Length: 291
Image (cartoon, rainbow, N blue to C red):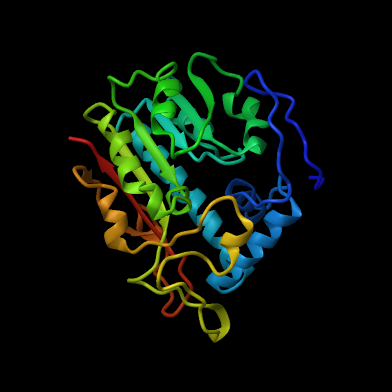
């Protein structure tokens, strides 16, 4: 992608300029996943994130692990929990394993609303909408910190009186404590029907340090305030939280087995035993059901 400001061809009735001078999490993840929809500032931010987790190989592995969890969670929700409605907030730049593709493969009658606030994602909205029934898929340009806007626009496609899977995968660690991420999640869940689910992955700190490769000392932020200097070049914070803080997102919900675990421990059937001392992606993940 050229590092010049651009305006997407597809907009919601008004042009949105893309700022290529400030990094954005969706584009950082795109770079880590091997995509090309990113700018130099995003690649610089990715390198700073990589230093936080012990190198670029680890950072890329973390991004892949996060995407893999999303896929496992969506397949489980559709195939085993019987969910037919998905609200994916912080959807990111679409690739071959986006939520819509996975959900519709498992349940062709599923409805999916994808939400993000990066204009680069808006430029790819046609991929998120897909070739299927336009009444079953929608894209909402909105910020997680505006939950009422998201709910109102999602209700045009989803029936909020019926169970919905709320997917907050790799997005809550970009919401700083003063913005009250726990209150935002509680508000969203409160407006969903009983039988709905919440799926979360979150940058972890505190109870399970990540080991750096080749015996190097891992670089971590014990206070959970950000990944090195990356906050200075990104629109969003980068806040690691401990297991107790992640568990608070599921207050009032019934956790699906195996509960809140590291990303490699959530329903990864047939996975090899972890190698002692090997690096583990520092992500807490979990899925919970609203009674």
